[in-house]
Image (cartoon, rainbow, N blue to C red; front, side, top):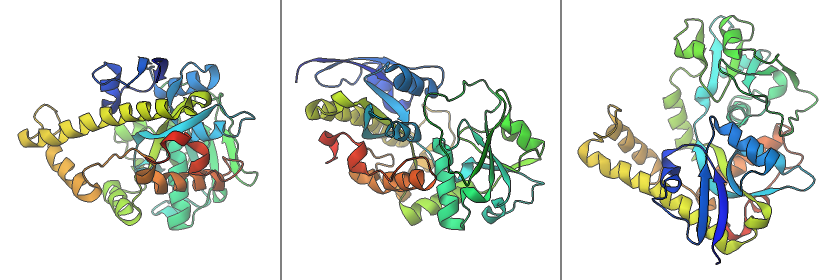
Length: 332
């Protein structure tokens, strides 16, 4: 493989830091790395300007580009961000919402766009596990309490039978929730009113960790938020894609091993009480590699998201893993 110069963009994560600082190299690649103030700026630079050869993309953002006339990217099964999302649903305590089924008929705010990554998962789970579908609710799309540009670089479809409106720019959905102007909120980020312990706001699932651990034990799904997208012409180079995939795996595994070895010394390098116990609990539930890369370990999770994306009217058709991933890494 000839030495390739690649521009790569992603957020500042422990699992990517060894790539960014050069501690781990991608074989045969001369890579330059860049991040931004917030990760959606990486998404925009990739989608709007093709600023990178390889970049982190929200899974829903990536899938929307698959509906372009000439889809520009394929993906690698490298979930840079994943998060359980029962905890992403907030309610006004005076809304009458006590259980998931009570969301039917309510007005729900959603952060950034209809069907952001942290919105697709809760909606799918609400439909699968509780029979609450998006068409049973009214949706208001807006921002939270810190500045973020509108997401206008990918399509924002929604089914005709789902009531979706957009709040004026600068509207704080968290404040609307606290004031009772919306009944509930689904958001990737935690609203300020909740962080400030407003007595008017609560999570729908009060013990969300127990709920999410039961969900994983029952389904085996650790929800994926962001993948790695590659310019399509590069994605068709199997040797290059295998080298890039290997580099991301090595960077993630180095941190995983560091955290496991740190348990010997009670992870005293990190200011998180009981971190070793948490790691031990997670390993007991999720295995030694609790944040797996590769298609085999993530196929069920990705297939579930692809189904949700189609059912929620965000994809024109039900896509498959074989259509969205670079062909040279399908064996991973």
